[in-house]
Image 1 (cartoon, rainbow, N blue to C red):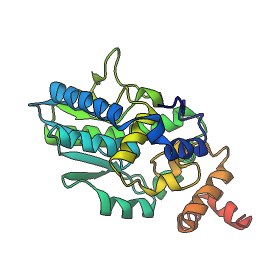
Image 2 (image 1 turned 90 degrees about the horizontal axis):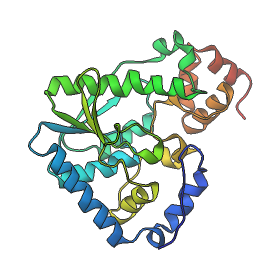
Image 3 (image 1 turned 90 degrees about the vertical axis):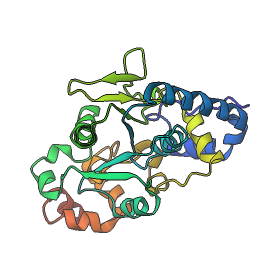
Length: 263
């Protein structure tokens, strides 16, 4: 097999992801992938089998792989956490591709909320990006966990993305008593792309948008690595102009962007 590597997601260009995907069958063999699948399903059964378990589903590439592996291990209950600032095209895709046992939790952040938290618009540092994850995903997951009386929640987090998966393990319990298990912790980017290729997984529109693999799934104001607020509006406008037009009613920076003329 080839030795091409994407490296850290934050540093790899979008073109690199597409190039690796084009020749993924020369990089990861079907046999090697199937062994990875077997080991991961076994790990899921070992740590979550017999427990009240569910998985977090975002519609992103990692969660789509996690979905199939959880099904193989007999886990079907899952949760999607969103807010009121999602891309319409993504929500439409979710309607067509969501798992049968999916429960949706909306944490409620909207334009009014964003107007009084302007520092959350287009995060320019990892701290703000982490705050988005905390107030949407973590909060929604904790609510779901408690409502369902879960013993364990499976996530699609991976070390290759720089995600925390547990100290010396791929499972941990946070201060609120939520136990999170990341069975994909040791999967490489290439492993994920190989699964998508060999299992013919349909991806959401994010990955066809500008900087798609870099940004991943996200509410539109949480879009990272724009470099500036105006550039953030430019990128979002290229995806869905109606988002910027609606935002301009409450957010001065959106109004200024439109007044300056769309490039």
